[in-house]
Length: 504
Image (cartoon, rainbow, N blue to C red):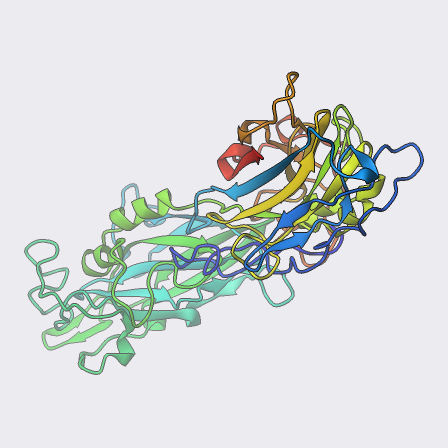
């Protein structure tokens, strides 16, 4: 992928409401912001006209100069029947807090779910990209509301060189107090999980999640994570890892006033995520999503259901370029043919419209065009995560059409665009197009790079180690749905972007 330009949001910014991923597509800077110089003439054989430039509306502070071309009226300005169009491209995609997740509840070799006794293990398999991490939670049974989990960063699954890890990660696991129930002596107190008459019978604490070592008011004796468990992450193949949690404690791990007791581990949950604090935040109250049920009762059902409903890929859309052109021409690509080499590859692989911006005057049927790269309300160029939008304006006349392209981020070379002939801006009676045109948006595969699992594959835009590292693609631009051998799940184009147009 040429010019690594897009870095996906996975949450703080992208999922600020959910508190997840903290990567961003902030690499989309000023490149291409102005397009080519206004009025640039076209090369022989390409039809276009210099004249009044269009505008691309950016963030706070006004509009960006669109840069290139004018309307079909030519140098003299807009035709009498020309209209000024405004296009809004809004990301309406759902926000997913976790890339994937699940419940572990059945010890290896057991036929039914149950607690993990000494000498037994839970195992589960995950798939993760280079920027994703592992978090999990399991109860230290015989307590009121204590659980084992990594800290808010989670466990990195790749080293600093981008290579998958294999080995023990127990040193990254801590014993936490959920702060939801007042602590009693482990295995002795009447409301500890093994002694309570029913779930959730202890005294409410109304506290914050904290490492038990930092809870000064608790003077009971607890084992360290390493005295109870080992956690290993073993890379198996591709982006797949096997995680094993083994109870290595003795039958006397808990030292109590009534003698030593065993320390079982409860069923729990796991998530693969991009950002911090996926399941809880230290120093803050329980999020109310199910950690309390694990920490107090060893029951992962509630949190497991929440994870299932909030797992998947959150798709930003990248900066792109638009072009007004003569109806019937194919300025950006031809379906079933190889990429022109004018810059669609850079948009489709990296969300970078710079090369396409420079090529605008040479595109077939070109009349006017520019980039869109600054979200409305933003002071700087960048991707649009869910809830954000781009906007651009231009004049056009009957006989003109609109084409544009933006990357479906988290992929290798998939982009949004209408058909190769674009969208006609006037009907046969000369009435300008207006309203929701999302149904004319499609997902295209540029054919320049082999597809991998979105958001996870090693050469998808957020996971690649360097530019242009993917395998060769199919060789032609085609609808994503027509790509042979691609069995990955993708959203519908209009489930990610809502495109509306108005004319004045």
